[in-house]
Image (cartoon, rainbow, N blue to C red):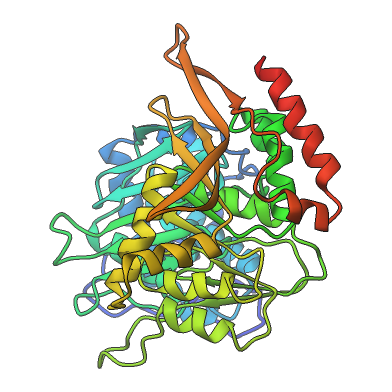
Length: 489
């Protein structure tokens, strides 16, 4: 059988087990030999197909006995299995192979377990060997927004905007660090004592951050920002109450008519989700280039080039910064440039791109209001060492940015678009903005959920009206603004 030590490749006959090296397997080998010699006396217990995971199964507390049993079975499995042969199998065959061997070990050691407990143990061990260990059931749930691992003993999740602790834990800090290394190695990065901080991503685009000992005192800290399997759209955000139907129509037009957009918001407010939604309204024949620290945007267009920064190597060389990527974009004949997150001097290069024929470019910035977003852009340009007069910097911003969309996570955990704001010009040295849509909080219900509504500010002809007319969208824009004003009245 593939995967077991001492087995001819391709043979499905029951093999003789090669005696593992002592002392680690001393307690396992006699049991294995006994089972082979007296197989009829210890028939394999029939195992049912694993049931579909329940939504809250991942949070059930497990006893110390369960973890002790799992540790014994896992040690026996590692002593028995041939990992080099297992690596040649496809994931499904490898999983079946591990299940067969674990069933044998459970029967040999005569653990007293129910069918459901045995299935749970089988699934856990398969996840440990082939997947992300205890994280697998959490990654399978689509209702979780964040997974936060604080060392081997504490795992928290965010569900519906609220953080709660789970009953999941790791065998020890070394298992947790091994899983962190498995995640980051898939995207060509590493995390260890010499490089203890790492940003990475999962295959589905979920954002991963790891900070390992010695910086993390109580064991590695792993944070995963999960993305939903089904990509959200603006229409779905309307159903969730994040924006009104009329407001969503305005956003669709903003994306369609190639306005330069900055999405502003705090951590976890839904900036990346909103950016993904807006890119749905980019024409399918446009060439779009994305620049990110960890590639997580999920654009639907057929002509997309995805670029990702690179950290320095062990010698401190070879780093490719966001600024390097944005500069290089300009030589790649982009029609739109999308920067996943603007954090530093690259904002200057993005603004220059927006102002030199790359209309419809977008980016996200951490800030708490549209006005603060403008201030942060000024600060980030100053961080780049540019000695430009303040007025010149503000003129560059005004000439580049058309719309700022503010996202926020409210205190009840809900996410809302709170401002759709235009940047319209300057008066003296002050940047002038006007709000098109605002979110007003009216109160809260008996369960603590905030009650509010999106309202029009009464602007009947936005500053980007001429751009909308150029793209033939002025009538649609007028209808949306009029409907929003009537709804407010």
